[in-house]
Length: 562
Image (cartoon, rainbow, N blue to C red; front, side, top):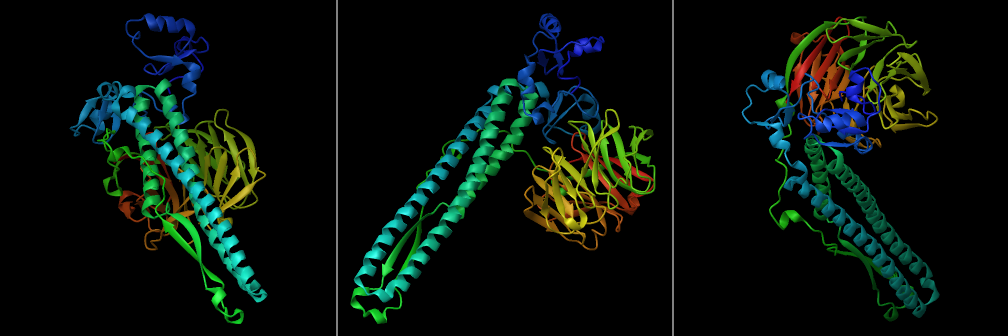
């Protein structure tokens, strides 16, 4: 954003500090009470839509990051490119969208978006999903009740039957009851697992409904338009989840019955078995609503998801790095940060590639991670030290050290948790402000000097045998890809806005991209492009730029187009 949320942007420009009381999304700045009156009276701004500062700050953090201006050129968005599904400023159109045909004025695209059929449809779909999940949960809970009643009734029948035959059937009865309880227990476990998944989906839908309501009340039209696309993906995933429950027959009702062995007609010493437990299933009674099958659905335009074959790299800048062992890099306010392991220093370069300033964390600097919200830099020392260092980039001073008791390489942060490559200890997580508890997510030896990266709710890492792997935040493996001839000494790893994974291969002198599902890969850059022992790379999701650094001398900044 162009100004501080809590300070009046107009007064700040005049070197006056006044708190803002409202926010104008079109001006992209806060206004104090006095400037608010001028803003409402001015011919140029009187039609602008403003909201209370407290309401605007209550928007989800991802929505607040959406601005009216291009992050690369600092100019206002004026065009929406349907081919690339992205807003553009006038310079973007000239530089990267000159050949695009389907360009529309962004004011026309976002006009009346909150009252559009697409927005209303999204609200209705979220309501429908919530109702369907509630029906499924109640139906599964009712099935547990039925199973309990089945078990109770059968237990009574078994006991009555047993009373008619002699005492040596006690053991057979005990076996039969055990089998009955085991069947019920196994079915209850299956149904309870389904209910747990459903309750998790319900929480996701409630969160989406809350966010959509906040967006409707307080977000700008551009923020609303782009937020709808994100929520649409969540809605589609939840619909697929419910369809999979039906397709895999996980909603079939289970019931228990039994068949006796005509015990009264057989001599007691000839009875080998008292009965057989029978598990039967039939279609569940939960009725789900699906507006897709009831009427023609008005939705946002289908968005094409780019593949690894769509990637085009355009070299924007080549620069000389400082030091002889660059192991990690990241982008910070347009500047580039490189960690040099041997010199025990971190170098911050300006946008033109010249040195801005140097940080000295007091240890080797294996890997770094910049937390944009708090403007803090996490520093991992590698194998010589056991502490994660936190540096405040505002005053460039070390604030804290987190002791983890193991080697530390690649490092990322999310929601107050620090995930790190613990080498032989595997993939681990520790609290940023509560370092008493360390959890091992994945118990497999990770590659020395390799990065880790997070995208959405997935973690991507490189194991000791150069296998690229993906898991969720609980450590459950989703996929892994092994290519011995390509992923030779794989070191750096990063992810773009579409879940495509980029890997720098130190031994094979390549940069490779992997599809989001881990099934395909493609070589993007090689030795002929200047790639020589690449160790560090970082994708900036705001500017669509890929920063790559060789171990020595050269670093490259690429524009990534779909």
